[in-house]
Structure formats: structure tokens, C-alpha cells
Image (cartoon, rainbow, N blue to C red; front, side, top):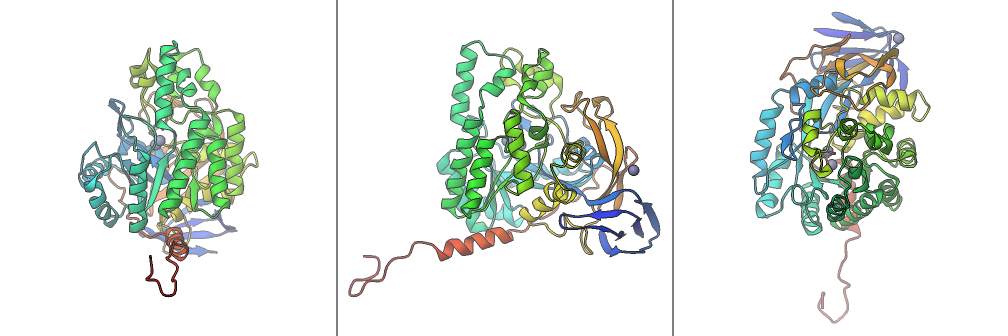
Length: 482
Ligand code: URP
Ligand code: ZN
Ligand code: ZN
Ligand code: ZN
């Protein structure tokens, strides 16, 4: 059974060309003129893009006394409707829990996924067992380990633990990720704000100023450099953090930065809304920032100092958000975005000239496929690549409405956004997974994608670090090392 996608313009990270795409089984088998197949999809007037990869989701995540409301079923339905064909979720071991046991739990939950998926393993506590189990995690196809520098008393790890874990990552050819905020300062600011009578959702923003993110990003970069390992900074929201990444990259360090589509398009004014529910629904960490920070993030994507746009999809209902009525520190942190990432980024990025179409593909798919070491199986339109494709209609329009979304929650932080440019058809693993507003991929159709260790950038960095490692000076007449 073959499918020919005909008459479209194929847009990849490095090329825009008029070409047909032929799919056989789960893979792309040809890209070129005049291809024919058993089934034909007419893509005339449309762009054919590699399926989006969202490397940052929290589906059915246990957090702040509840579980995020989109699970792998509804979350991946939303993903496919929005042109995303692979999600990477975070496996979060409980304190003292075995990493392998937690991984089994996450595989259980992800059995419902409609699109392909992978996991990052979170290092939520540190000890001999974690150190010993990390190689087995890598052997099971996970090459990234996440560290929370915030959420004191819950997920947060300290500098010594991070340094130990980063060194272990270096040995294993894995890459650490960080949520970079100074958790000690945030916790103190939260208590101070509450004591001063700042109890509403606006105080969430006050408790997490850009400086706490910038400091933590600098610290994580220094720790990664000393450990000799690349670093990926999730949800970069501000100039301070971007500046740290930019500077590190210019100094030759291997650091990657991931802004979210929410931080690019929504600002801190959202928290001042007089409607408590409206403001609380937008509480996430880091919080939304002002225009200066947004401009910095857009510039980073255009110039290459930031590489990936994700969502951090972590959806809580209004009822769940109300756990924090009277105490902003109890509002579950997180916002949705999986269904909207591509179309919002296209509308606000490509249609405005902030990004080229090729840059759009790079930041929504190709760059992260390379960083996570699954390129060119993912993130490419090449013979042999997985047939994860989006037929994207640049003329189609829609107004975002929670009432018609696939996500399980009762609101949408982009409510009312006018979009121009939408996925018309999404193919996932060679099958039509979404077409004309309808998700066709079945629950459980998604596959776990193994990601091998020793990605090219990590290998290059360890070669360099070995070359410049401290060595004893050989002195005549005196034994080495004395
Ligand atoms: O507020 C957020 N971002 N919630 C999800 C957990 C995290 O920090 O990524
Ligand atoms: Zn985070
Ligand atoms: Zn997150
Ligand atoms: Zn059209």
C-alpha cells in the first residue's frame, strides 16, 4: 500500500522545492517529480512539512497534588490535530523510586498514545541507586535526563546532585536538561509575597522574576561545562536566560535553548486580568514576560542562539486551578498548547516575517530531531525517514476556541487568536492520522521511539574535553605527579 502526496511544495529545514512524496508502509520511499501511488493526496497550493516534534509535554503528570488532565490519548489527539507527530514526555520517579519502575509506569500510561513518543528521564532525587540505574535507562532508548532547579521540597535537585548527575550523563553519552530557576529564591519570594497579602495569580509572576531564571541558567551552564557535557535548557522565557545561552555558545559551549510558543506570544499582562480564573489558567513556570523578553526570544530563533519551540503542554482544568484560590503557590503550574503550536508559530512567526518557512521547520522539528539523536528518522523528508508529514494549508483560517479543541480542558490560553495557516492533513507513521478536523489515528497507534546515546554533538564535545583535560607535566628526574 503506497500513498503519493502530489502537487505540493516540500519545505524542510534546508530546502523548499516543488516535489511529490511517496510513502510506503511506515516510511517515505521517494521525493521527486511525478510519483504515483495506490492512494493520492492532493497537496496543491499547500506545503508538505516534516511532522512536528514537541520535546516537552507532561501528559497525565502527577504534580502539585493532582494529575494534568490531558493524558496520552487526548494529548496526542490534540498533537496530531495540530500537526505534531511525536511528543517527548517526562518520566518522573517519586522520591526514592527506582528509575526503571517509574519508566514502566510511564510506558503503561503511554500505551494510549496515538502518535509516536519518547521520554526524558527526570532526576528527581539522587543516590547510588539512581547512579546505578542510569545506564539501564540509556540502554532502554532514553538519552536525556531532566533536572528541576525549582519546585523546592518536591522535584528540585541541588548543585552537587546536578554535578554528579551531569558527570554520569557525560560518561553515558547522554544529555542533561534543566528547568532553570533558582528554587531557593523563588520559595523565599513566595513566602514573602504571601505574608505581604499578595495571594492572587499575579503574585506567581512576581515570585519568579527573570533574574532567578538567568542566574540558574548561568549556573547550569557552568556545571555542564565542568562536567564536560552538552546542556539543553527547557522553557527559556527571558532575555537573561537567553543571554546566558548566547554567551555560552559564543564561547564554544554546547548549550541549546527551548522557548515555548506561549512565552513568544502571551505576556505578563495576562496575570493582571480581574477574572481570577482567567489569570490562574495562565499560571505556569516560568511565567509570561513582557515584550522585551518576547523580542529577545524571537531574535534568538532567527539568529540560531535558540533552537527549538516547544509547548510544555501540562493542562489543568479550571477546577484544578482553583486549588490555589487564596494562595497562588497552590495553583497547579502549567498551560496547554499542543494543538496550537504549529499554527500559532506560523501565524505569529512566518506570516509576520520573523521566521522563514525553513526556520519554522527547523525549530518545530528538525533541530530537536538532531539534538535528541533521532535525525533523519524524524525531522526530515527523505527516503527512509518515518512518514510523519503535515500537509499545511497556508490559506486556511481559524479562530482558536476551547469549545472545539481536542484537549480535555475547558479553556485555551490562546482563546480568540486568529490563525492563518493550518494543518489540513497529518500523516503519522505512514497513515492518515488527522484530516479535515477529524483525528483518525487510534488510541494506542503510537510507537515508542528509542533514542540512542552518544549523539554527534556530545561525541564532539567529549573529544574536545579529552584533548584539553588537565595533564601532569613530566619533569626530568622527578616521578610524574609529584
Ligand atoms: O508550569 C509548568 N511549566 N509546569 C510543568 C512543569 C514544568 O516545570 O515544566
Ligand atoms: Zn519546567
Ligand atoms: Zn515542563
Ligand atoms: Zn489553500
